[in-house]
Length: 389
Image (cartoon, rainbow, N blue to C red; front, top):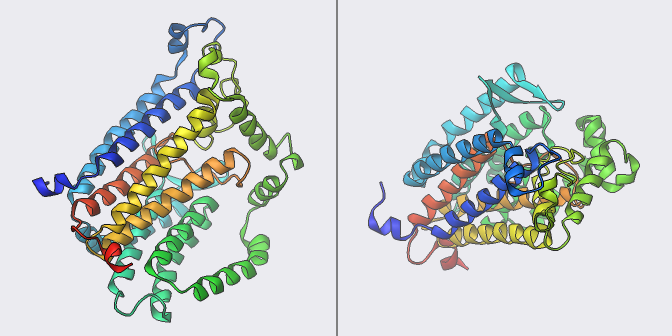
């Protein structure tokens, strides 16, 4: 358990930030899923129309997520690293199981049904990848990462879950795995020449991916991203309605002028798709306006900065790589999710951490920050990265 020194090193700011983001998310989920009624002209009527069942479920997932975060934080991250091969292959096994016995939704087969709950193994694949890559990179610290054997290990570790998730298909999570890997390699000191070579290889593979890997709906999403007016009543409608929802919040949001109580907002009138999951930021921006949207972005920015700070003060390279992996994951999710709600990124179905409705995403993120807290509590006075640069 925790001793006094480790409790002293606990990053309470990260916990406060997570609580704040979850709180905003719960309000947004309640607003997104409430039933518009004609007599909801006041706070009492608005509360009566709230879908507290969905908010309650999110609270349950958050409550159990806190338990998972505390348990993870109590465990020495070196133990997690030693267990990473077993965790990695367990997740790979679940991804294979999804292929044969998974449930389908939205044209993709990504979930394992456990009673009424649907578990999404791809969410946990990101954690397994972070731990596995941190182990690979730290074990090859003396030889460095800029050699064929080290890079082959990295590519193999990434490639297996990437391929299984891409076949579901889940393009967003597949790209998230690449973003995590690039973030960790960058901090590990990979050569810029190798990064450029890798970028050139990816660019060369784009035509093949377009014709042989991407599904038709994925191609359409990319084309709609480039020009939402291409299909304004189909796939383009999602992006256009999201942009309108964000813009309708103006400076202070619809909450201030009472429109939320009367049910006259775009999200409550069901113009906005996936409003409690993929487009939860649009609901929050509509409710709380530009000020609220900037506050949410600032909270995520501070969370990422604190995570990087823990990585810079880690006792060893293993700890720093775990923290950087989580920071890379969070940065990609925030940039992609908020970007797609404003039309500056293609729609991929990536959830917004701690805000989007869903148990698998909440648990995965809570465990991820349990890992970060574990690294932070076991740091030395002078961290690994700060002593190297």
